[in-house]
Image (cartoon, rainbow, N blue to C red; front, side):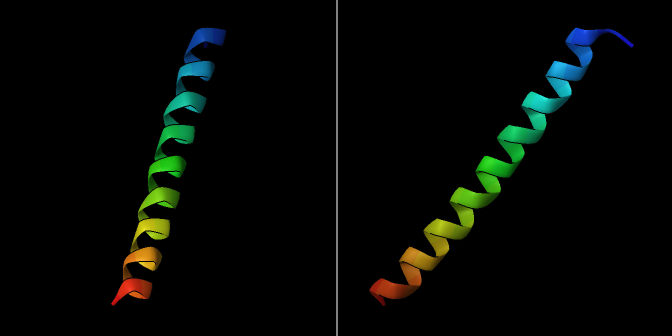
Length: 34
């Protein structure tokens, strides 16, 4: 277990959470317009 591996895992997790949050935000925004 190296430190770089932990940082990579955290980076992937952050990207996944950001993508998920943006998708939900976009869906809510789309529903409001209709």
